[in-house]
Length: 134
View 1 (cartoon, rainbow, N blue to C red):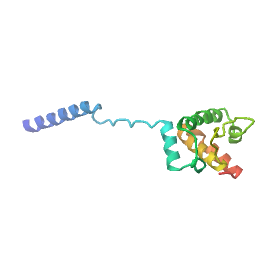
View 2 (spheres, rainbow, N blue to C red):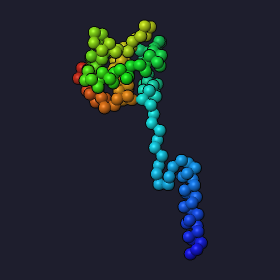
View 3 (spheres, rainbow, N blue to C red):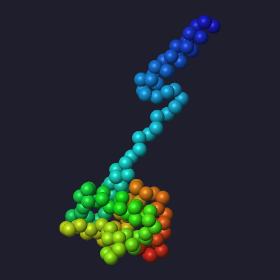
View 4 (cartoon, rainbow, N blue to C red):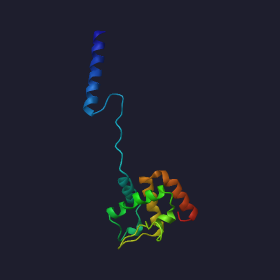
């Protein structure tokens, strides 16, 4: 009986030491590190390339400037038409020496919304489908 108690106490001590060394406590799992929205968005662009940008496209800095602005406008209740409107939101993804076809712009918007503000994804997709553009 004494041997079992010592063995159990030793196992518990070893588990506590191992948990302390790993930075956690026994029985609790470590939280997974969260992936930044920018990494999610850029990863989606790599996985589903925007062919309008095959010859020449935006820099990462240029591209990453759009999602926060898109999400802010969506939060204010604006539509995709507003976002991409030349006279309204003026947030169509285009640069001085690169452009984006309409279908690709919509795909980029959906990928950005999924990464940065997923609560608006359903609304954006519904609007794009209703317009026949997605």
